[in-house]
Length: 347
Image (cartoon, rainbow, N blue to C red; front, side, top):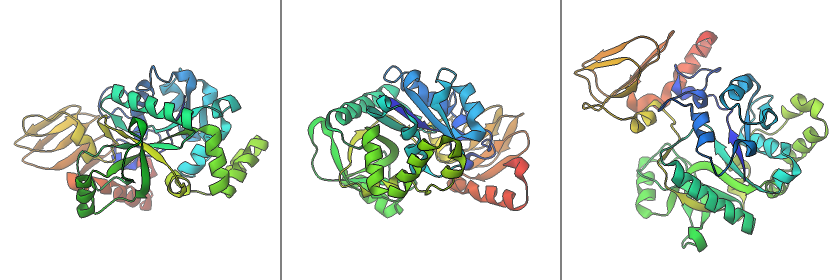
């Protein structure tokens, strides 16, 4: 099995800790290791570093190489510019040697959290065996633990096949609270984790059928690598879900139950950190007095709060964020405002 880790995202929802030069996947949000490092480590021993490929940006290349020194440098692929996940995956798979493309490729985001790495590897290994044996395209859907509105869902067809394989009837966008509750109660839906498995050669054949413009562009780049920057900028910018997965006649899944979270906001981080007696969570030098249910993070100096509840408070060397936990998904609005004010030094 080859593992393709997608590590080019900007992670703006973790501002001010996350910046362009130090995005979410390079941060240690829960333990001492970065999310990217954790992604590599949880693959062992199923996939060793020699079979790992990382797709990231030119701006992050040096940081990623330093974070994953055991991954062969030629397997850290640098996008000239971000063009969404369909071009990133297609270009990465096309860049692999033919022998690697003939085998199973697992596509993994670099910035997710997995609580039970052994359970994750077990499901990934089972899915890999199915892909190898039956040449399917598969996704791993997470067994929902609550009615989450921040995730997309996979609707499952009735019945399960051998080894618990389920057929995905359709991909569902982020639902309303009412629909999310209905999805979870039905037992017929999984969270869409953005984890995919396929034979590399099969994926390129599917891409040629469903996205001929993108496939032709990838072949142009392969034929003229010296024009990569020029040609890459012309590739259609689409997500892998929209460009490929939602258009497939048959895609299968295995339910994944491993303490997964996409850590999509400060509030999501608060849900996985251990709370104190008052329900406060956090990292760094923090003091909370008469305060409840707050997320407190400091990477510079001491952060103290008094008499507050339900807040996110994050302190760095040059910025402080304060917002209600329930609105932490909206941190991008601050990014937009800073950009409008010309404050690139804070981005």
